[in-house]
Amino acid sequence: MNPFLQNTGFAVSILVLVALGLSLCTYLFASCKREIWTTRCAVRGVDETLAALSMRLMNEVADLGARMKACEERTTMLAAAPAAASGLNGARRAQAVRMLRHGAEPVTIAAALAVRAPEIELLASIEALAAATMARRSTEVN
Image (cartoon, rainbow, N blue to C red; front, top):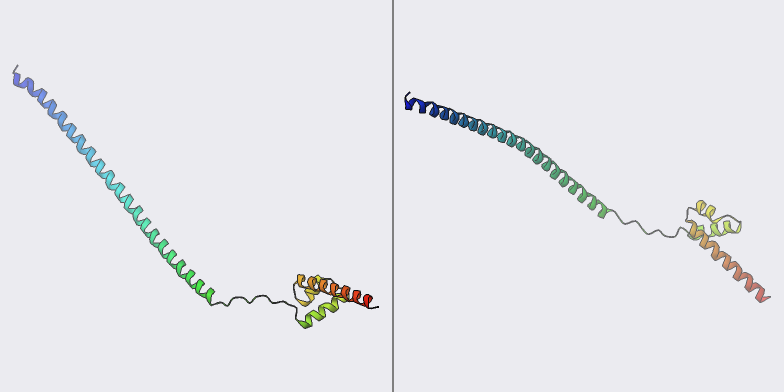
């Protein structure tokens, strides 16, 4: 047999194997490229969604900032609440003393005169001290 023909079969089989290897490499390259393209498209979609959410959040923060500023301006425009003055003027004080002398409870008097109960309790203790002082003076004089 011809030595050239014997080597040709070997060379052809090597060429076939090389062609198969190159075909496999080309297929793997194409599939990797397709997977990269798919991943990039997915990442672009996520980036667009993230950008839209970020823009929405920035708008919400700006809106809240404007609303907060408006509230602060309104707050500064409001007058400070006047300090609570004593609810006992002369007429109420006289009425409270009268009710105390008739034996009414301080809580009842406070509710009736629309004043705080501690003020009536203080008035009751002052009236009791005044009555005791008057009684002591009257006994000293006699």
